[in-house]
Amino acid sequence: MARYSYKRAFSLIIALFHKSLSKRMTPRSQKILALVGLIVIPFGGISLFNDSFILGMSSLAVGMSIGVVGALSVVFSRA
Image (tube, rainbow, N blue to C red):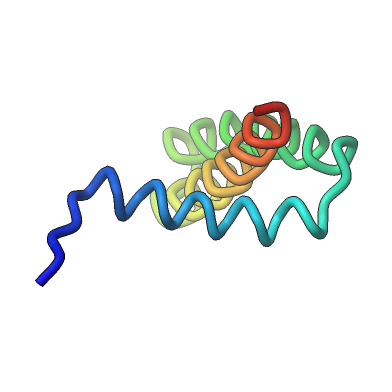
């Protein structure tokens, strides 16, 4: 039985994710996606402390996921 470490599993997931992203996204859309994620994250933090916990956490999660997807696609497209 083959043993997989967490690093190996994570690298396999990123490799599959990158292959599906690189076919669909242009370099310009990758940069726009990363910027949108970085713009949404501070609004999530502001609403987390001012308005409501649920709204803040949801916008933080959305911003971080968009930002991570955009940043990973930009990094892996240059590699």
